[in-house]
Length: 246
Image: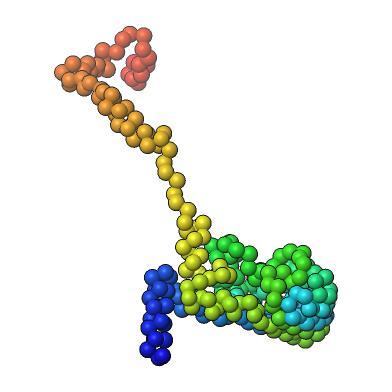
């Protein structure tokens, strides 16, 4: 039994190495593991942080929160500091959020306009008025408490990410978040340079033909050059009179 397990694991690692490289494979497995968790400590600006929220999927949630300030921590694989202004509240499926995010500092997964962020909507940087909480995960479970003048806390898990984490060991990526896969299929990496136009291809040939047709100027021999002295200047031209003639 143990021998079969070792053989199977070796086959998986060989497949992973062929597809993504062994280092990229284990890096993506670590990122998939982080995707299971949400943990953020918040610092409200004075009284502009108050409320509570409890959630066990989008179907079973209740609460109301108003918050302005900073969050420190992690939301799945994204780790950093968020500046945030958020108002949200509701019950069950009638839950809505208005949120503005400004990333103060963060790792690669919080950077905007990267191939990873543009490949699919992630819900890590939220700037919208949206149904639910804007995190694009119907099955997430979390809770949050905000108290005026005191640090707040938000913690939770993403159970659906467990499927992505387990299937990742078999080189499958149902959440489309593996970096090696993004680098292989994202348009930023797969876009080929456009071939030069026909006019650009013909331009060097036209320049060569033009140079071939250009004739050098003839050189006049020195013997034929007429050098006129000052005394040979035609009459009528102004000459500088010397002081003796005055």
